[in-house]
Length: 210
Image (cartoon, rainbow, N blue to C red; front, top):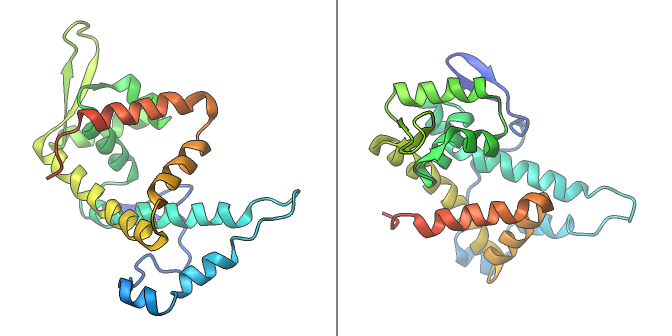
């Protein structure tokens, strides 16, 4: 559970178990070469394929815990600003897609217009996002991050990138491409191509990394 302004906010992936930390101590590569960390040994044990009629319990739970810790890294920064994960998601996609329409953001996040409106109002009021009228259709609301918003989006993305880089390095060569293929395959088939196109367009249009 993440807290915001003294209240608990619910995220279906955000349950925290008291006996599992989201701040693991990372060993260096010399340590890995000498002896496999317990986490790697445990991962090997859960890699056994289940029976044909048995759910993929290990992968389901690995996805749960991986997501929990992946979003947990920026949570600490967001809490200091009285923001939650919805603010992070809005900031991320607006930063990656300057000038995106509110309707497109609703389609991506799959939340109600009222929920998005509350989050956007906070981000606009506090100077992280601005809205502009469309050049052709003035009824459109086009979203852009401010310099302040871009800095926060980059700070949060770098935290998550550090976790990803550590994970890919520990798996070895080809891990990044395998991870991309697996995650793309998890997306609904009818949406997969549009999602990949959306990501590729943002990649090609992005500014050089600072």
